[in-house]
Image (cartoon, rainbow, N blue to C red; front, side, top):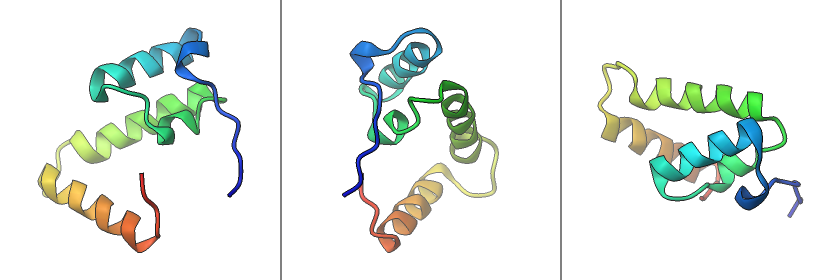
Length: 81
């Protein structure tokens, strides 16, 4: 399995620490999908905004349906987290 260097929450500073603190407030922890983007906090922020727009923004699909679709796609791609 490939290794990707990440910044641990206890080592984060500045903008990255703000993203990590927000992640902990939202989910109780910093998930690996967030840590994978830790070397580029600006890209991480954009990714979080995209996620919030897709999953929490107005849509003809309900939130549970959007979550189900994300789960099905992840399973189909053998991606688990």
